[in-house]
Image (cartoon, rainbow, N blue to C red):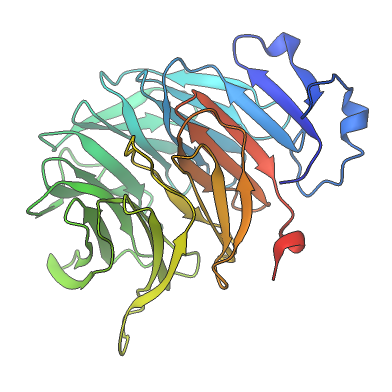
Length: 349
């Protein structure tokens, strides 16, 4: 991450924001601009706070202009990415913790998965909850919006169900029932396949047109906590409580082993949180939260650790990558988020 200035932004005290160096001495904005910059952020590193509970999830919108964060305190905060990162809305309505969030492709909706067994559909502009979708009988662990259909999403939960939703209808339009709790799910890029992972330690690929199991990816030895498709749609990332992040070849036709690479250095720790990872927007890096309070970034080709970013005071539960700039977003049990720019040219090896 670029060295230099840090700006702290608290939604309850935006008038008194100050720009400070990493060592803590106050400086003015002009001084901060002398740092070599790689993004349009107000400062190289920005800390966001305001929610009262541990932060489980954080996501950039598809344009990168906005951020959504979900908390154990049952609230969803919406933030501007640029300028002084104003917290411009607070969404309330869930009666349980928010475990994961996602944006629709056109940024008109925000989807939420909660421990209250429901999936929320929110108007991203007004903050109004449009739907409280019921179809799970237990905690909803994950939600992922389709890349091809603005109204379609997939959720998974502790009731062993993978539900496909069309938000224009009342209930799930398709359900896949598993034997064990499903912790993570995501779409393929073409929208024909759903990937799932859970406490059986395996990643599974499902053809949602026929509800048939296409293949099973075996290699992890503990619960799968996160699945993410690569920007080109050819690889799948999986994070597990076995302290390993793996990538898999998920092209339609593969001869031989689908396992690709294994990345180590981001332990889950004793808390066993549902830690989430991400791809960089160009697929050249993989970033992950960690139980050691850091953000770990690997070169996706060489598997070498490019960055080990400190700053959080608790387990880092999710990391997201800006869709257009080298900006990393992270959220933590310490109730804060960090926005930080990196310089990929420094670490390409």
